[in-house]
Image (cartoon, rainbow, N blue to C red; front, side):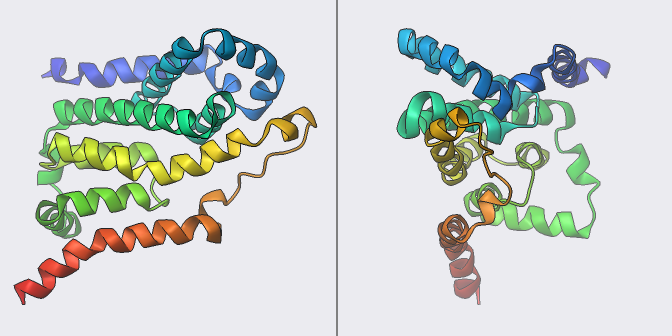
Length: 229
């Protein structure tokens, strides 16, 4: 029975090690400001290895649910630019989220879902009927912590293919926002200015397109409701 929990033990141990080694202080705007020249020089000299290493780092920290993904996304924009930075972030985040999903499914299976109350039963029913739409909306709505959205679908009979697909495309809008911030903060870092991140995902220019994508995701659900009647 205890053998089933080894993925959680690995994740908890890696998380504890990351904290013990002072990992959070390296994922901060202060650290980026302090080491930006060294990082830029390394990326210029070892570009491909830097992109791959960044993807691996992003995937690893996502898999162990380390907070601060938005800051690491900014790092990606600063180091690699808008296009490559977004691709690297999305690939890394998708791999990490999938690893966490598989770990949660291996440990819990559907045992927690079986004990869920009426609300979760209703959610499960809707999820089974409109799996891609529901998963895509969960990724788009900037209300739920990323690690929660990674774990919850594992408690239900979600197809791994649909999970990967909706994760990859669902995180692109948010990733683009933070990568674009990182892509344009060089002057602010050099001037020692603060980078305003508070409420970034709820600004009108950002939330408008996301709401549009959410509405598009709801079309298949609405269509099934109408045709059923």
